[in-house]
Amino acid sequence: MSLVMTLATRNLLHDRLRLVATLIGIVFSVVLVMIQMGLFLGFGHMVSTMIDHANADLWVLPKGAKCFEDPSQLDVKLREKVAAADGVASVVPLVIGFSDWRLDSGEVTPVFIVGSDVKAGGLQPWNVVEGDVRSLSQWGAVAVDRTYFDRLGIKKLGDAAEIHGHKVKVVAVTDGIRSFTTTPYVFVDQKDSRFYTGMFPSKASDLLVRLKPDADRTKAVQAIRDRVGNDVEVLTTAEFRKRSRSFWLFGTGAGAALFAGAILGVIVGTVIVAQTLYSSTKDHLSEFATLRAMGSSNNYIYGVIIYQALFNAVVGFIMAGAIGYVVVRMTERSALPIVITPWLMAALFVLTVVMCVASGFVAIIRVVRIDPASVFMR
Amino acid sequence: MNDIIIDAREIRKTLGKGAGEVQALRGVDLALRKGELTLLMGPSGSGKTTLLLILGCMLTPSAGRVTVCGTATSDADKEALARIRRDHIGFVFQSYHLFPTMTARQNVQLALDIRGHHGRDAARKSRDALALVGLDQKAKSLPDSLSGGEQQRVAIARAFVANPSVILADEPTSALDGDSGRAIMRILVDAAHKRDRAVLVVTHDPRIVSFADRIVRIEDGVLADEQADESERRRLPKAASWP
Image (cartoon, rainbow over all chains, first blue to last red):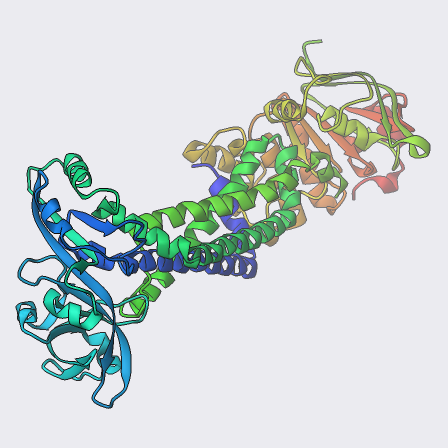
């Protein structure tokens, strides 16, 4: 085994204070990027959580609807037209909209109504920890998430409240269905949702389309488009998810802010690593000059510096990963959980290596100028 | 002629520019032969370090021609000069220039490592080289724990472990006491005589002339008359000899 690694490691460990400073810089940078990107992913998941959990292959939306929460409406008569298209198994109207929830204390809080035909499926609450979703078909039955109990003035299953002047009773409790808008989702049957949102019976927010198992998705989409005309759009679930995420993340600037934070993390990390590697290299210039005088190729010396950069990257990344794991665990039940996927970790590792190696080039530029003759002057 | 390892002809070197221009070397001819230990002596500023750098392929002459083991150095770029050093030359520096974080054995092994020799064989050769300079028991010691003489012996082991054709030593004894200096010179003499290498020692130190096969004096960038070792030794005052 070459001594490149030994020399590089010893050089780093020789000045432990500087090594610690370098690693803190890398960890700070990687954790910052990790959290920003984790928030980005978490936010992305959150804004499409309803789309992800809907029992639909296709979505028929009012033209230009930007996201699930879009208040636009379409004509519910389109349901028959869509149902008649080749490959369509079922069509379920969805009624959504804001409403007001009155607590026992008389206080009013806004809620977001999600109304779907309980018997037909469509969009039903998931992660139900208490009660029964089938009970939602009863008049005035609602399902809420337990994280919003305090907000809604609810203590347990069976408690009552009032939505838009109508008495309601909690028949199912979910866990973890949180809204990024902080307005609690309230699941109800479609027939009730019209009373709460004020939507006319002739209207619906979206149509959820299930295709037959053997249906050709592309052909089905075209068949539906041919039938419904240009006032509505037909999107696959993936397309609608992408549009919704794109709107909330980029249309609102939230994503840009998260990205800006991530870029800032990369810049800070690169500068810190570059500065410490440069400083370390400068301290060992006489050693590099000795190597050069002995006849070492430049590549050998670059190898030492790059290995130092890689050592920093790997150790820094492991430490940052451990911190990231703790952060994920701490936020997983929060309003905006940080989501760190294996792909994000892989990308962060590559980013850390690139950041550290790029920093190493600053040191290499200094080493290139070494005059081996300087060894004879000392 | 085949014995010549480094051949320098009509070497001229100008340092600085304009008013600060200095003719460091003014037409130097010097050949280093295998099996011969040559001393290059001269006062400060005489041009001996400049000549050493040119012979060691770290500096290119303003005029003249240098060949190392038959390879001309005049048109070589920095990497090519490094390759010539790597292939043919071992260096011993006045300040040892050992790597403080590496053991004695690793310091020696670095000379093999930069030549692409790694692993156990390189480690064994490095230990053998240390044994030749009497430091086999100190293979695992860091430079800081070694005396000046021991550090210089490690540096010499590093210089010849890769079996170079020529060893260039810059003031190898100047920082050492008498016993250590003698030990170093004996090793360098052995390197020349027993291992058939060319050895050039640049020095101010009059105590080491008795070890030389040949003494070359340089003054004001010009080689003075070359003297046979016996006549030079006779010229030295007694006080200049090691006790």
